[in-house]
Amino acid sequence: MNPLALGGLLLALGGIAYVVVAAGSSPAALWDTSSFVLVLGGTIGITMMTMPAEDVITALKLMGRAFGNADAKYDEIIQLFVELAEQARKDGLLSLEERIARIDNPFIQKGMQLLVDGTDPNLIRQMLELDIEQLESRHARRYQVLETMGGYAPTMGMLGTVIGIIFTLANLTTPDEIGAKVAIAFITTLYGALFANFIFLPIGGRLKQMSKLEVSEWELALEGMLAIQAGDNPQIVKQKLEAFLPVGARNKESEG
Image (cartoon, rainbow, N blue to C red; front, side):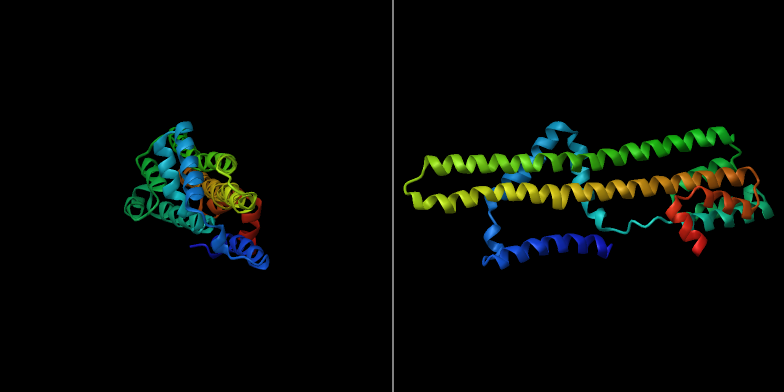
């Protein structure tokens, strides 16, 4: 759990609650079940018409991951490949098989096994780069679902408001009722804005960032594997991998 991500959401919602209370009302006054169902249900339904239902369902299930830890594990990856390089240099590539079985990253496991099996370096790069492309594509389908929902939610909110105003005017008996009924109608607009800008777009953006970090980790691991296969000594492996780090991460490594 990343406390900053969750704290950011709570801070944003807290700001709205403060404004409502400062205006002399209660946050409970903003609750309307029919508006909630219309905006959320309508947004999900329209998104399923636009994108594969399987991707929509998967994206909704993965939303909780946005509040997980998104820190890249560059230092752990570099340390792993330095250790593997030391063992390979000392005992040979075949000695790595037992160590490979204990690695909990399927991508690294696959690549190292190809390496130990004597696969051509160019073929290893082609196969693993294809895996990276597939990872990017799979992740993109997930966060694009949330970006799409972030676009539809405000529209559903406005639609709900229009429907509410139509029925308010059609069933109006006294002018005194206009204020209260129109206020309820505008709640759907509020819900649309909240779902888009507090839920779907921020979470989609965070999942996109987490995807970029994972891809960069895989790319770093790929270079580590090829360096070991090339017979580079551990220090050269370390220097090569540090050169592939993003600038910010590279500075942290040098400080460490």
